[in-house]
Length: 115
Image (cartoon, rainbow, N blue to C red):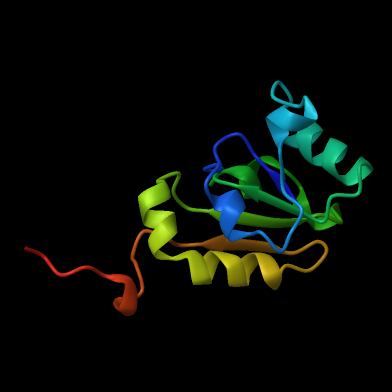
């Protein structure tokens, strides 16, 4: 699994059942989305996790083998509250699929009472 630049690093620990490589560790920090996705497919990555909401408008994802999971925020505190939803989206990703994960609203069981 490849993490795009904006994907919060702490998410890596929550996905410990997957092999996760951030783009910068691959030496791909300067690659834009099309080139980054092509490089990921060439290296046989199966899932691309990004926070780029515009990716579906910028790239023709229909011809890709890579599953794309888009987190609709870069906020780690919000993502952390919805980890089961994010992990499920990654676990269920199929080759060529595209899925947006809305983590702006935490599930009821994860909300903290206002004090």
